[in-house]
Image (cartoon, rainbow, N blue to C red):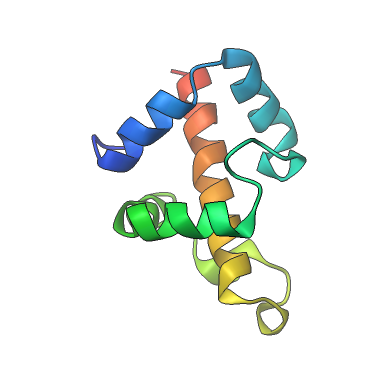
Amino acid sequence: MLTSTRLDHFLSDRFTDQDEMRDIVQYGMSQGIGGFIYSSELRDLWDEYENDWEEQLDDLDIHFASLVDDVNRWTMQEYIEKAIWAVVENYCWQKLNA
């Protein structure tokens, strides 16, 4: 569960629409959610909240290698994108099931 971090405040401000959160839980972030689509957006989010993203991944017991099928064929940017999406998907699931 997210603790009270800058990331938590960012996510709670960004995700206020329950219909959008239901879509994220049902279809995943790869469907294209505004602000989480472009590599540059995701890299900026990673850079701003890097420690919080990593803490959330640890709390969820998610390791970079588990985010992709073949660790030899992915770039660090792709790992970052998958990591952010995993945390956001979990955040939305938690908020809807609280």
